[in-house]
Image (cartoon, rainbow, N blue to C red; front, side, top):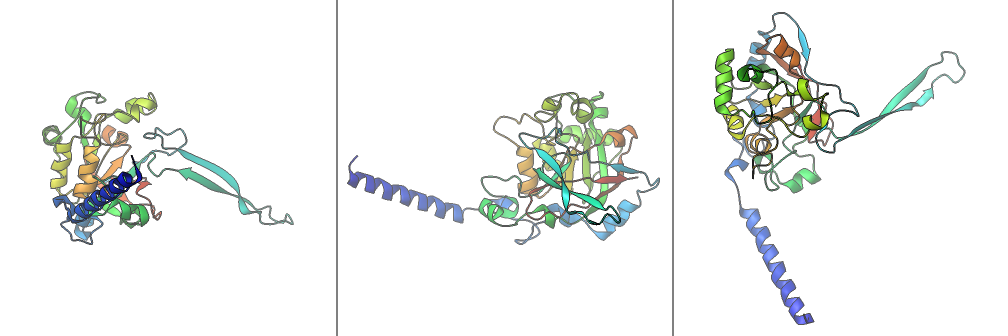
Length: 315
C-alpha cells in the first residue's frame, strides 16, 4: 500500500472512531437514570429510614449476636486470582524506651490485598454494563475518580431476613444446578413464614459454604448454586437494600450462556442493590432464625469498589 492510500485509510478510520464516540456520548439507556435523581450514588440504600431502624430493633429479644463474616487469610477461598498477604513489621519506634526503663516494643503490619476476599460487599463501581455503572456513571469516571467508592456507603442498620434454601430443597447443601428464581424464592418464603419488604437485607443459606469452603476450596470459589436473574429482579422490585448468601458470588456459577454475571449487572448497575458475598449464615440457619436486626458499618477505605466486611445479626 502506497503512502497516499495509507493516509486516506487513516483519515477514514479516524472519522469512524470520532463518529462512534459521538454516538456513544448521545446514547442513553433507561436504567442509567436513578429514581433518586441524577446525583444519586446510594441506590436502594435510600430506602433506609430511622423508622426502619426502630422496627429492626424491635426484633432484638434475646440479645444474641451472630458474626456473619469469615476470617480473611492468605488461604481464603478467594474468587479468581485475588490474594491476601499480611506482613508484621516492627513499629516505626519499635523500641520506645531505649534505656530499657519500660521495655516497650511494638509491631505494625503491611497488607497487600484485594478488598474482594472473604466476606465482602460489592460497591456499584465493581461491575457494570458496557463501561457504564450505576446511574450511568462511566467507566472513565470510575477509573479516574472516587466515584461509587464503598467509603461513601453509610452504615446499614435494618431488618435482615434469612431464606433457608436447604429447607426448600430438603437437603443439607444445594448442588450445582440448584438455582433459585422468583418461583423458588416465593415458595421458600411461604413455607418458612417470612416476608421481605422495602429496606430489608436478604440473606440466602445454601449450605455451600459448610460443604465446600474448607473441603473443596477450588470448587467453592469457582462454581456454585445461586440466585437467578429473575430472582434478583423480584427482590429488587421489593425495595431491598442488599442481597447476600454463603457463596462466593451470590449468583449461580457457571453463568447461563450469554449472561456472564448477569445478576451482578442487574443488581449493582441497573437496580442499585448491593451484593454481599461469603456470608456465614450457618449459625443463623442452625438456630432456625428467620428475621433479625442487621448491622453493618463499612470500613471507610477511600477509593475502593469492594470492601471486606463483618456484618452482624442480632436476635
